[in-house]
Length: 251
Image (cartoon, rainbow, N blue to C red; front, side, top):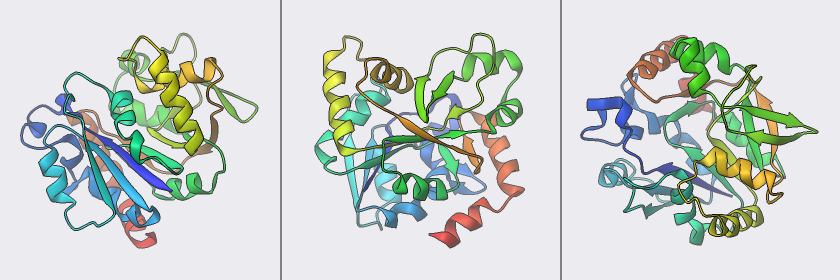
């Protein structure tokens, strides 16, 4: 199984912190965001990075890892995660776990994904309490995404929250079976809107019966970092639990 990390964006909402380095190398508790993921690399036959902004910094930081492949998104300023995802298509000859590069999470989630025999996403149960630390109610409604489940599958993902907060949130982590990755790429080639965001693309794939997406619920620790306030929230959370030590010890 392979790990594909999407790390081409600049992270402009972190302002001056990403002036000289990419978002995934911004420090949280004096460690780059990416360092919380590197202990899992030995779980995978190959780790593929799609890089763009300040890619030389990422390559230098990871210079001591041997199972890495870098794919350059030269047009990172004008493209999004979906295009970055499929730039790596030539390397996906096995099942793959895809991860955002601006999240910190309990790496046991990756172990659970590896054991699942379907294309699957973990969905986060404690999301609202986390969002309330990050933003006010109006901002939550604007930022969070809808997610619906039925019969052990995702029936809808992405889109605005209209009336009621969903029970769960997408975590920026996704396992795709090899054949499902191929189906999604073929579907991507057929759509007109190549600027579509990842959750909307997944939703369209589900709606058009291209992808059967399963899920498992989790309360394992997970943090998303979009801006400087998120950094402060992340540091408070990490100081109050043993996530960092657990990730290092277990992998």
